[in-house]
Length: 77
Image: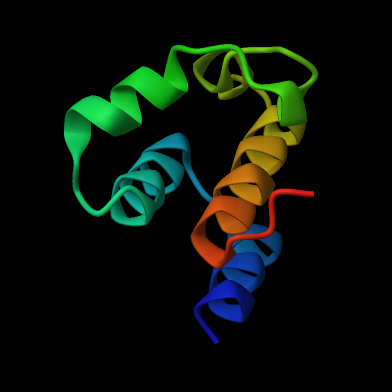
């Protein structure tokens, strides 16, 4: 259910970078240091790019959001 709401929000009004960061912090159980570390590390599911480097375009934001959704639901494939 949460996933459907997040996807709807992204499609309906293009989630802002802040909304994605807030969601990411929730995915990481409000462990700010772990989330900041994740943002700053190259990620294989993002073509070895750092998530924070993708937050400056709508396509990049969608890729980060998709990655966070996979983390939240344990789908790492």
